View 1 (cartoon, rainbow, N blue to C red):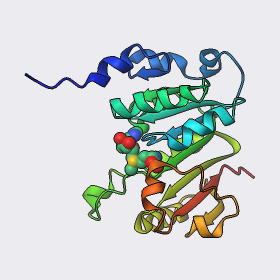
View 2 (view 1 turned 90 degrees about the vertical axis):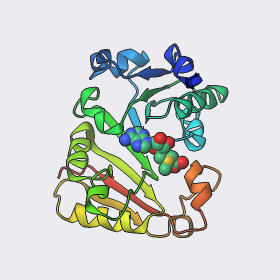
View 3 (view 1 turned 90 degrees about the horizontal axis):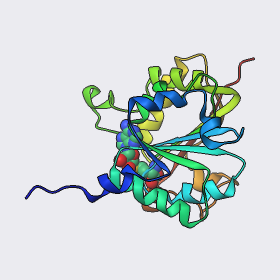
Length: 216
Ligand SMILES: C[S@@+](CC[C@H](N)C(=O)[O-])C[C@H]1O[C@@H](n2cnc3c(N)ncnc32)[C@H](O)[C@@H]1O
């Protein structure tokens, strides 16, 4: 008998998970109506299992959060973890992060987090799958409100260096914070709020970058 992923059914009627349908576009520029308040919108792509964000949501009841993840089980476990901590101001969108154009309007985002995205292989045909690409960063710039940020973390030094090289060729995002050894250099580093991948890789140097939409 063919294996049917039990999480497909579990997320279908979940009040905090939206599966990709054309209707999602109807929320564009109307996420405030969806959340029933005028709080700023934050986005996380490559969510994984939500150790970090299940804390982040209840800590910031004055923000609305959208998380994007492609695996059924991770969407479900993450949503449940957050609800257990009484976080309600969030929705998981089960879809590829590259698709934000379809449901987030220009200037609708306050802040985006991209933590430990897959670095892919060294070959050009593999690297083209990375999320930190010019077109994507340009799009995210448009979606972000002035003076707000994109936060990127990775343990993969080559991916980080390639991203910095790419940013040199772009004239929109400005670097507001950079570290090649975040957990040892930063006073803001909080070892109690690590993502699942950070827990695995914390022995390695974690590279950290904050980009700001500075339109001066
Ligand atoms: C390396 S894990 C990192 C998870 C988490 N951010 C952390 O730091 O623990 C990457 C996660 O991104 C998800 N993912 C991969 N490609 C994606 C995409 N294009 N859009 C959204 N999520 C994606 C995978 O299913 C996986 O859960």
